[in-house]
Length: 289
Image 1: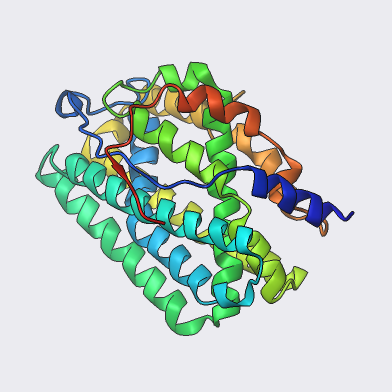
Image 2 (image 1 turned 135 degrees about the horizontal axis):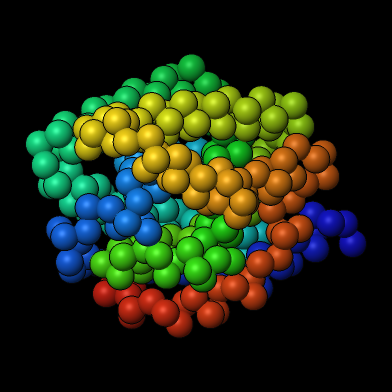
């Protein structure tokens, strides 16, 4: 049995179930710096959230374009679960982004500006990239979201530093990104499988995401005047890139994608899911896949 077939068996055992949560975010209006009371961590995550509504729709469209290539009923269920989960992520993060924008006129302008830039970048990708390259980009960006999700799920101490008003959103998102982390990759392997196309898409996707998140995180920090507080900036950057940082801890897993024989389920972290599922409120609605 090949590594890929073993991995797909693992995915088949893992239910990919969309959950509509309707998070209330009670108390968020008092939690401007909701992640460890740190502006750098908070704004980095806020900027990532801004990318999710339109980014998730791009992922869904890239996968839908090729789902007719899949004959296996279980994998069709997995694809339906992926589409349903990503749709729910778009809705919940739009609500979260609206609350971030509500923290002031400057925040509102920055959220809308970042949304506009993200939409233009994705529109350019839809226009200039073939459907195969869009799927390759989706597989690569899904790896990035999966390794960030893994960092959250492995670090209970990190999760505890999130304000309770928003903590369930990020735990829920991390759980579902883990559940469906191989769906786009497997479909790309079916449709194309070209290693170099996959890597080019991964590098370009990483570069755009890094540039976007760096620029707009800095813009939010300037809006708050944090750029004039070097100690605060240094402390936040250490939490991002220092020992066991939010980003630095995920970097080794980023490099795993470069291996020719890579598959997302070579890192089987399913043991983390049950524990964290138990911390979530009951879904408000059973979402259709």
